[in-house]
Amino acid sequence: MKKIVVAVGGSSGSIYAKVLLDRLVQLQDQWEAVGLVMSKNACFNWELELGDKSFEKYPFDRYETNDFMAPFASGSAQYDTMIICPCSMGQMGRIAAGLSTDLVGRAADVMLKERRKLILVPRDTPYNLIHIRNMETITLAGGIICPASPSFYSKPESFEALAATVTDRVLDLAGFKLDTYRWSESS
Image (tube, one colour):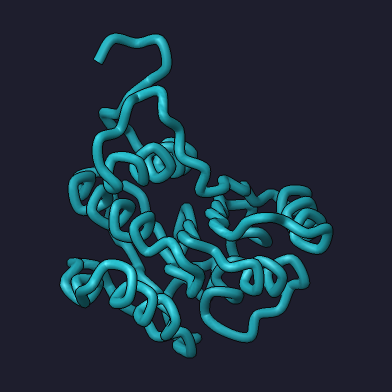
């Protein structure tokens, strides 16, 4: 059973967060705890892009960005994985610099120092050299950069199915067992 942190950053791409959270609900037999942290911009973008506040209805433990008493703010809580989806370039830069100015940065720092999985899903494009160097720094520290670059070979027929080509890959990286499209396998 996994203990996982999901942080929803303030960049565009709320559909990725929604599909990820929906999938985690479906995979509830594989996790013990899911901690959810959403920035104010994440909530704003969710409402703007998806037209609702359904982020309030997920059955996960919610934490504010300034709640340093959250269990995953310490390595002793033994959370296995943190996924930041979407991850803004600003948040990525703060993580790369080791700045723990909020709960997301602190939890990311904990994952790296404890050698646990940290998966960042940037959606912004194009990348500048600072972004690329921040990705390199996080990768060298043990993090995984999994850009929100959807695939098309499964022939997704909706925005949700297209987003799932990214989020299912993220959940694979996190070690979840899931039924998803696999290259060269019959569906």
